[in-house]
Length: 288
Image 1 (cartoon, rainbow, N blue to C red):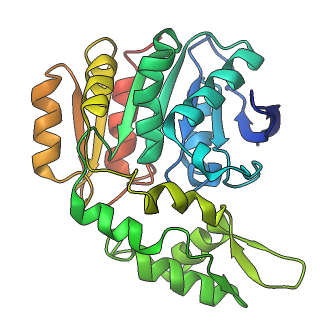
Image 2 (cartoon, rainbow, N blue to C red):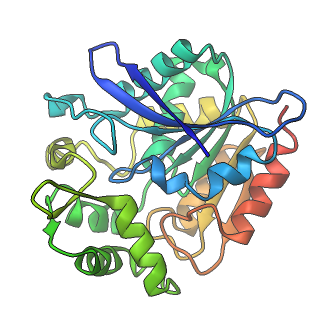
């Protein structure tokens, strides 16, 4: 269903991405999907094939320190600008000059940063439950579990843990859905234990108070992104990171930005929900 891409960052890390080929049809801009803080490319395992079936090549990245990408020996490099540089390097290696970006949570912040780092690369953007101002309520929840280095001895334990930190956002999830999520989030180690598929040291910048609710740079990046190209904000109706106040502020700052809300889901929609897919379908129909 997908091939594996391995490429080298400018500072020598081996990085990974999934490459879903486009279905036959006229050439259209590819889609680059970027996951959230503690997640990886497997988050897009449902939506990426759906997008590819509509005739778009889809590349879902593992940001450095996550999934199958190498961990950075210097945690100070776990920053959105470094992540953005990695995406630019990948695009250059693959000969991609323009793409549609879908960024979930941190992936959206990386997409905003790309609007500053290499604006010409971003033809259009989908911000999935993220923006230049974040709710402290949601940030506190994210800080509470990031980088704890949890290990478990069974997939049921892993699924229960995933449910414990994400149940507020996905109250209707079934046991099967939590188990699928656990398999995306954990890997089996040589001794049979299960460990999270990310470097616990991604929390080092967070503990240094670098994960802030807002900044002038974030607002500038958002305006650069959303005022200059087609942009869609997708918000989870139960989101504790982009609440209605933050969404309203984004819409006021970028009146042409499209907006869709996914009911009964919090931070962040998986983008396989009917409301999310309808919004994505309509949005992408306007982008060559």
